[in-house]
Image (cartoon, rainbow, N blue to C red):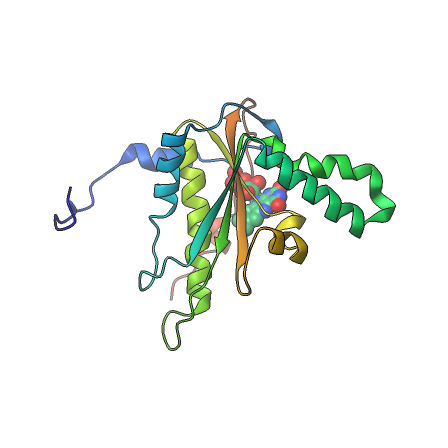
Amino acid sequence: MNNTTPFPLPSKNPQLLEFLKSRRSNLAKMMEGPGPDPAILDDILSVAARVPDHRKLAPWRFIIFEGEARERIGAHLGRVFAAQNPDLLDRVEFETQRFMRAPTVVGVVSSPVECPRGTPEWEQRLSSAICCYNMCLAAQAHGFGAQWLTEWYAYDPEILSHLGLTEGERISGFIYIGTAVTPSQPRPRPDLSIKVSRY
Ligand SMILES: Cc1cc2nc3c(=O)[nH]c(=O)nc-3n(C[C@H](O)[C@H](O)[C@H](O)COP(=O)(O)O)c2cc1C
């Protein structure tokens, strides 16, 4: 399909509905290798980037952690954690292993574009959140486990600067992707009767 071909009108897609209705995250700590190969990861990222985006600003970017890069970021996490928590040195080793829980981790950076009287920053942040969700769905549709995590290092200025985030950028999530080896347990879902009203 080229750029000028109109898209087909929406049609029933019960398989997609079933997928969404039965969706559950997979725990990063229960993931193993392998992760997605480069072609599949590209596909997952292209789905992640195909999100509603007011004014086509693409106000987000992705940072991939694979292989020994996970050890390098882990070592940095350990150093920062140790410096900030001298009384918790027995947890440093655990912190160095966080990115080792899955073979592939993708950091989704919310990167709002200066847009005076244009797209509000809030909407740009929302767009980056949907990248995270789409990335999880695409990874699972490829048969991998996926979990959207933030944890402390998504908010730590030292870590953010180390990752090259600029002022105004924030982490929307770290998406852990790998082979799920343990089925997820059911999770209670909100009672829609108290969440939905009619105007
Ligand atoms: C922005 C955001 C950050 C999250 N960060 C964490 C986290 O740091 N730790 C965690 O256990 N779950 C976190 N979660 C929740 C999990 O990703 C997951 O959604 C949750 O376990 C519920 O599972 P479900 O996706 O199957 O409904 C986060 C979710 C969102 C939307």
